[in-house]
Length: 166
Image (cartoon, rainbow, N blue to C red; front, side, top):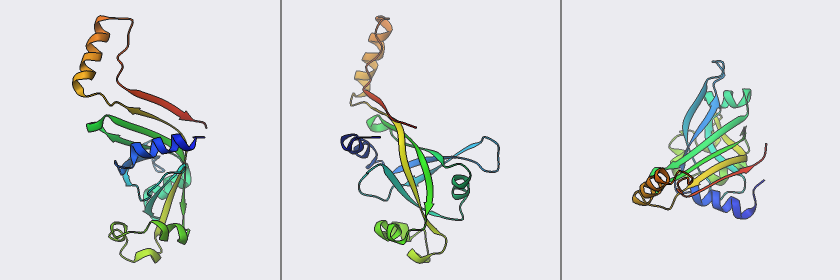
């Protein structure tokens, strides 16, 4: 798995993006993948990500059928892209629900923290990949042009790293 330093790097890349796209396999259609936005609620990353969700929502049933998921985060303005894969489950742990509760979440759950349909989506990340380019567009264009002229070079557009295991 990831080292504490790597977990900090991943958190630094996604914490300001806040909203990721959760990809699951649709339970009603053979092989169809579905993506929907999900908002981070935590203030640190230790290898798991947390999201509030109605237990009656389609994603909860899709996770029940196939717990493998993918989460993607992107910030095109800063050239940051992150893809995370892991195992998901729906938790009813009241301590976990209480821990991250905030007014924004309350707006989605009219019956509050005791809503019988309230669940916490817990995603244990086991692998991923990230791309992070600090270069501005002009530098990127230069790198691409240079690569076109010097066929033995590929453009250096920034950092790219795969991590994790199955």
